Image 1 (tube, one colour):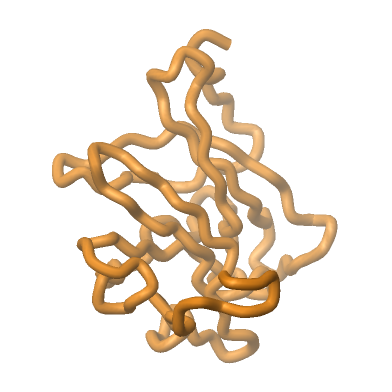
Image 2: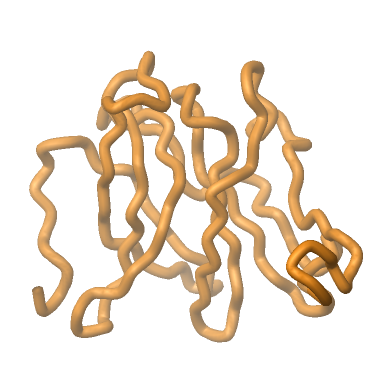
Length: 158
């Protein structure tokens, strides 16, 4: 930026609501993006829908070099990387963040979600956190969202 209200570079759009999973019937949105870095790779993990639907989920972009404001510098994951689990009564997981365990040995995801498929963007959403791992190709493996009341181990050294 050259001034607080003036860009020095053309606007870029690394991702848009162009696929069926991000273009839900009611409110297509890609929001809540968070950067995640690991092993020399950079990812953007984002909410791919809207909290008003049980199908809010997380999508992923992987940076492949070049101008980070150019869509050609990013590869969009063909499938959601974290999504609802009817078996665990977890609907619309989105708006994520990441943190390390106190001793730095574990990676954790924090997100909000509903326990009802008819839930929305109201006070019934709960914040949850769970440990995640890394796939052999260096991409994150967030697993399946855990239901309320399931005991989880605390972050390492806590």
